[in-house]
Length: 497
Ligand code: NAD
Ligand code: MN
Image (cartoon, rainbow, N blue to C red; front, side, top):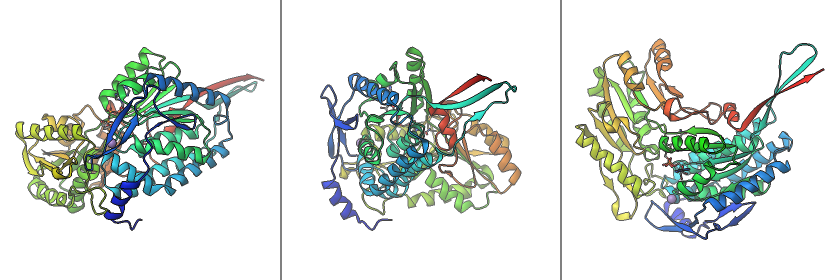
């Protein structure tokens, strides 16, 4: 995909233009207060820029503008076939700027440049393109009415959508929201994470270039407790869509209840079980997948396979295979195309992960791989992929979302016990099952309380399948046509003939 070397990327990192301002009504602008916050790269601790720190005043401006543009109809009432064309142009522009966006993402949040280029950017443009392509192929309904009535069941855009997104896949999570939100005709006020604002800020300009009218997409960088809270409490935001932690997700429901009862759609945390039965078709493939499920993206993945449930009869054989497989995942400079584990997003997150590793020791789990901070001399925040064996599901490292590369291995003796342990969590985002037994695959798959279930693989899926959580992993779904439900109101119109 790219022939750029580490030296090329480092050279580009020195010269890349970094836009740090908010984006309101088609223009970059500082925060009303003039405040900024430092954007520090976790790659090496270097200051990337000072980013506009938006708050209530900026939220007021952006929401007012988003509402006015929505009411004007310039986007909301545009023929779907025309919105489609603009969305496809937007996706093409994201692809055309792939290297620039990938570099910004890697510098800002520390993921390997190879992943930014091969995963984040193409999946982001695909989310925009897929949603755009769908919009002129969706039909409304006619109700089964008596002869002298006509009942129309139609979908309308909700109006002003506030989108609050996290830092682990900043561009991708943004585009999972923007694809269906914009395709259905809404105006959006986007708040990226204060830990990863750069790609969202850049994206706003590409939207304008694609032909999305000014004011339809506004971007407000800043903190959760300032601008995020202002949007969540805003009386003129119709729908709030969120990806982030369960703790903040719950708070957003309170804000909605305290304000205008805006619709709230939440994609939150996970503690996903990866269940390996003795009859797995290919233990080597299962071991490699288990390693990747916790090491990919430094374990900063909502669906990370952070609990590895292994049938006791194969545990002594299987765990060493996982320990061997995880050696292929080594922290290194994210700008090196050969690196597959980058830096954790910041010092706070690194210290949090290290404190969970300490908790694993304290609670009596047995460290069998990793366990340390590395590459400290770089000024960056790197932690080795880490495996604890002998974990009990009640330990902190098995119960709490670590959001880092720390794997808990838990033994089980029967199918029933595997399901019971897997479901013994407040979360319900994803789960995987490795077995050669067709009936067991389906029966365990049905018994798992999770929004995504993978059989004999980890982390399958694309834009065609819905993504989201059961229980405290959230509500509603991103991706697929099901995502459109979040961005539209359903209207029944009765006509007396
Ligand atoms: P976070 O909840 O700390 O922050 C998410 C966003 O919410 C950020 O933009 C933040 O600024 C904002 N925020 C924080 N406090 C706020 C407040 N009081 N009001 C309004 N906004 C506020 O989460 P994070 O650390 O950025 O991301 C990690 C979390 O995201 C993990 O729990 C992970 O599982 C989850 N995640 C879930 C999915 C999914 O699809 N289910 C995908 C990726 C990440
Ligand atoms: Mn950052």
